Length: 216
Image 1 (spheres, rainbow, N blue to C red):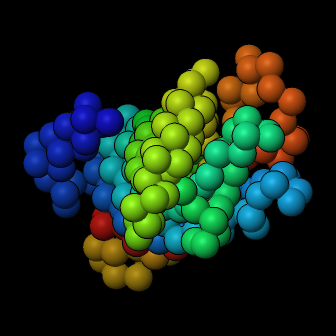
Image 2 (image 1 turned 180 degrees about the horizontal axis):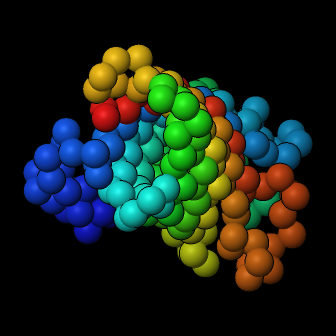
């Protein structure tokens, strides 16, 4: 994570933001993390998420983009399922803050003078910070510590932090230096190919829709 931020800050300060070879974007998203755990889980998280992306031109319609999204939600560890499950506030033991960071190969093509199409994909690391949930009673701390440790071990084990993404979006120029657009993204639970868990088919997938403001 530190390396990713270092690269982002280097590019921000080393290259002129007004250059045609550089695009800086900010986005607000609705992130959906579907679950199928029956009564063992609270409803699936539908979360607000904030993010930014920095794209550098490679030549022609090809760009490379460094993307970061941040979200937060609650979990508890299910001893029956032996994995974390979403938890409502009244049932939570662990607060998870996720930093989804990764480079992406971006195809960007102008459809007109004011409209551009984007298609992109690449590896994403979901760097999840697992913390004991806030506002628990003193007599709950031991169980919260146990559960938070189990949640962290699961999310960081067997490369479950690796979630490749595919996305598409459009940008509409609203001024000489600004474009307003949208994104649709899908993250893949690649780790399911090598873990031996008996997981529901929907487990690990993620979806989002975003509004995006780009500095041209």
